[in-house]
Image 1 (cartoon, rainbow, N blue to C red):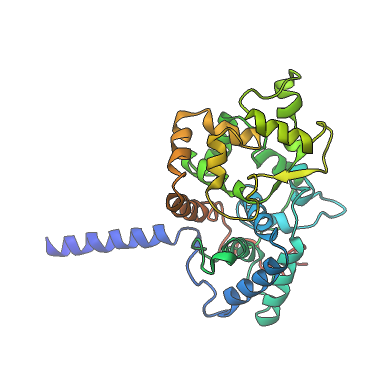
Image 2: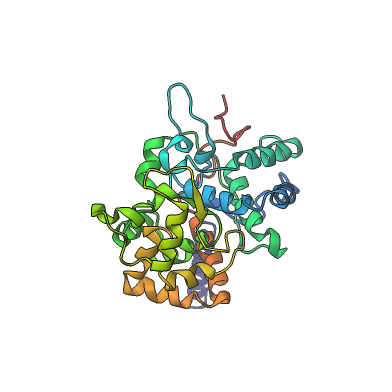
Length: 324
C-alpha cells in the first residue's frame, strides 16, 4: 500500500509539473543561453519610455493584438511582402505604433546573444516592462520560451481581433475562442486606462448609433458633448482622444471609475455594463489592489495563448522578417 501511495504521489507531481510547464513557458528561460536578455530588454525599453510616455500603451496594445492572432508568436511584427499582406497592415492594426522600439530592443539583444531570444518573448517582456517603468517593479510575471511564427496574414487579424464596436456577445465569443473567460475580458479591458482612441472607432456613438442617426443613449451626455468637440464627424480618422479621460499615461484602475459613469469610450467598453456578471466584475475592480492583482493574472493567461515552442517556428534574426 505504501508503494502504491508513493507511486500515486509521483504521478500527481509529474502531472503538476507538466501542467505548470504547459507550452514550455517558464521563468528565466534564457538564464543559461542569454543570462542578460531580460536586463537588456528592460533597460532599452526604459530608455524609450523615459523619452516617450506613450510607449507603454502602444506596446501593451501590440502584445494584445499579437496574442489574439495565431497566439503570442510575434506575427504582428512581420512586414508585408510582395506576395503577402501581413497582420500589421490590417485595418485594426494601422494605428499600432512603436515597432521601432521592438527593433531597437532586438538589435541590442542580438549583439549579446545572436539567434537566441525570440521576438515574441521580447514583445511580451517589453509590454510588461514599459507599463511597469514608473512603478520601478514588474507588475506581472512573464514566463518565457516562446518561438516566433513565420506566417502573418491581414485577414486573420480582421477575423480574430475584437472590434471597438463589438457588443458583449461578440466580445465574449472572441475571448472564449482564445481560452479566456468573461473575467479576463473585463480585466484586460482595463488596459484602456492608458492610450488613445481614434475618432472613427467610436464616433458612430456620437452621430449615428446603430445606424439610426442618433447619439448612443447609454453614453454620459456631458462626456458625449466633450467628445463632439474633438470628433466633428464619423469620417474623421485622424483625430484621437484619451481612452481614459485625463489619465492616458497613468496605469491605474480609473478606467472602471469612468465606466461606472457611462464614460467608456468605445462601444466595447460600454458593452461590459450590459451583462450582469461583467458588471459585477467592473465593480470589484473599482478597488485598486484588486485590479492590479487580477490584471497580472490575466496577462499571464493571455501571454500563453497558442505559443510556439520546441522546434516550432524559429528565432527570427530581425523581428520584421522571416529568416531566409
